[in-house]
Length: 162
Image (cartoon, rainbow, N blue to C red; front, side, top):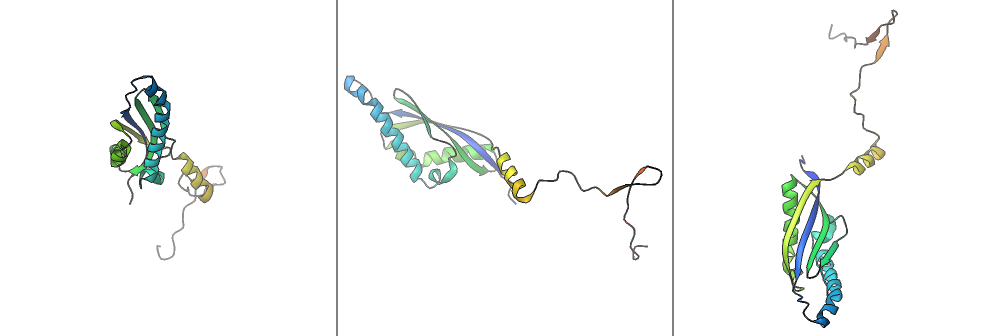
């Protein structure tokens, strides 16, 4: 029996680029360095067996502020609880940390916040395929007697039960 839940883990990875930006020429290169960094991170994530195989359910969003970079995305997984889901997302980032830092940056922080995934689309899909769920228990047939009172029909005892 599967007791786990589906979770969306809002994941943020903070980087610090080793690009010092000193001098006018180096500052002109910063936009190119940022583009190369984005491409590098995307390639590392795509080549990873876990991160590149469907666990990331959103775009990779990069925010630059000088030499600091904030990467945000949604990591979706099936796990026992929120803490396990958050731990799994952070574990996956740590698994590619050396490759990420091969670009010349440092991972400063990994922040993960899990919440139960919205599975209403899946329930609607199941209803479409298998028919709507009947939330009420089947009630015994109801009939009215000659006096107009509502009565519930009862099963007659079989001959063996008499």
